[in-house]
Image 1 (tube, rainbow, N blue to C red):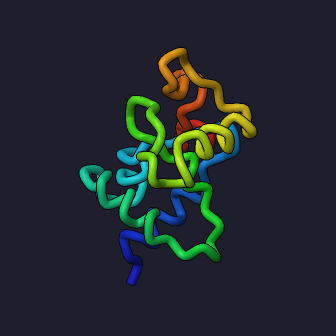
Image 2 (tube, rainbow, N blue to C red):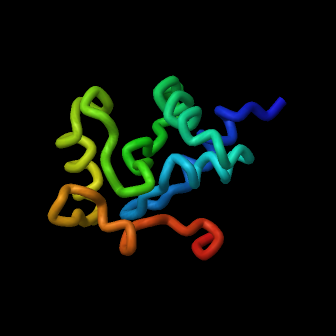
Image 3 (cartoon, rainbow, N blue to C red):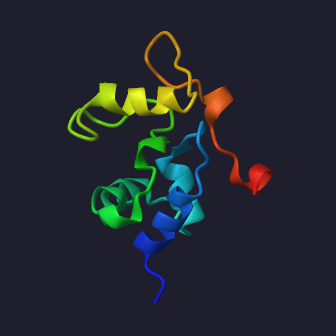
Length: 106
């Protein structure tokens, strides 16, 4: 059986360096477009051995994960900046530049 979590993990694994995806986009790719909150839970429980680029998943406005994730927003931001992701003055990701469009890039 192909679980929702397995589909989430496959989608997240495809996000290229320098790009980000929203929880909603990943939910849609996993076949449940209204399950963005469940995407967060799936990633929170993802097996470490998969080495998923979970830091590349953000909310729809380009805001970073809550403080308790990745050791804090500064850690996630540093990981993304190391990949070339740029931020707007208010601290959100420049989604026009960095939003992954899997149909275009696949």
